[in-house]
Length: 409
View 1 (spheres, rainbow, N blue to C red):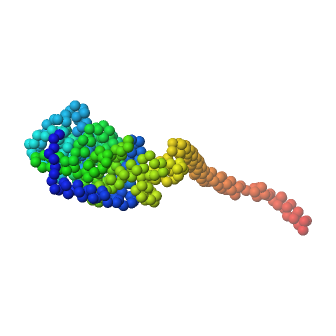
View 2 (view 1 turned 180 degrees about the vertical axis):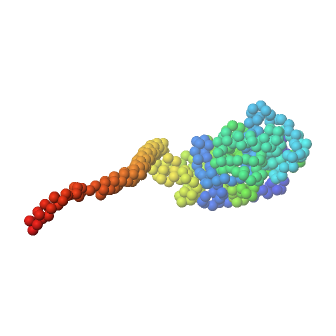
View 3 (view 1 turned 180 degrees about the horizontal axis):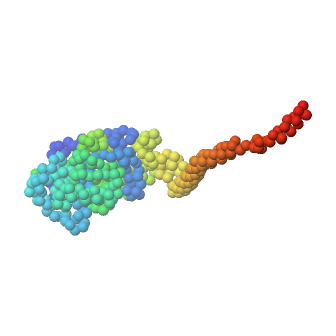
């Protein structure tokens, strides 16, 4: 794609300031941002992470996913890179960063990709979305579908360009997942992200990525900013047979974002092939700081001993993981047995209580019957006359009884 040489004083001044910035010594310690992550894509190993699952608005990093969706449409034969797109009024009037599109402009999809990657053009993003899906809302559905498909588990997109939208969020880990998949599937995308500037309608815009042209081995990828997020960046670089992808979300300003992206990549490349140096230690991150960055964070791992690596929160060996798995299964089995015994004990206790209640209900009835029998017998005994008083004596018998009584006296 032909470009006119960009020689404005603004661009020259910017390049000079950036060179001075990169010459400045970096401060030691954690990355100065809300979250960060670094991966050695060649090995698939996470080298550093810092609150990598914290939700943050993606800002213009959204455009990488938009380009991914559009390239999928090209790959499926629905359109082509050289397809001419007529810019709608709504696309041309999209606010924010722009590649200076006008209503009615006819631009190839290829050039719109440059507008998205280099100038971070919101107008270009809208034009691409309307061309590929018919509307921006239909395109957003495709974005979220693709995000789920490639494993972005903690992201939600509500527009095609990343302008502020309540409920739109992502994480550094998800952005890393997206960037890794995008570059692997579409390696030709690097040409868009590495272009130094784009010109359209007589106006030129430099690449918003401050590392392009100033960092050895840089592949891209994209910057972004909104007030709610801070300053975001995805950086990709290759050196000595290793490719690194780093993500920084929520840096305080553009200068810090550029310096920290450079420092993160430098630390990553410096530790490759060195067994006893980690990115965290190279950055100057203490063990106490690393502990706050997330459970299971491998940033302090060293291969000195497996036990030390596990203790420090490092990546566990396969044997250690198997041992822990067996231990967890044994604990789970013991808990299940204990729960079963507890249930059986509770059932036995309940049965005993019910039996006792039943016994208490039947006892008063038996007692009442027994008492009734005793009362009946007592009444019968009282009503029955004694043997001595059951028959009256005759006069002769009475006289004889008196005589006998006198004789005894």
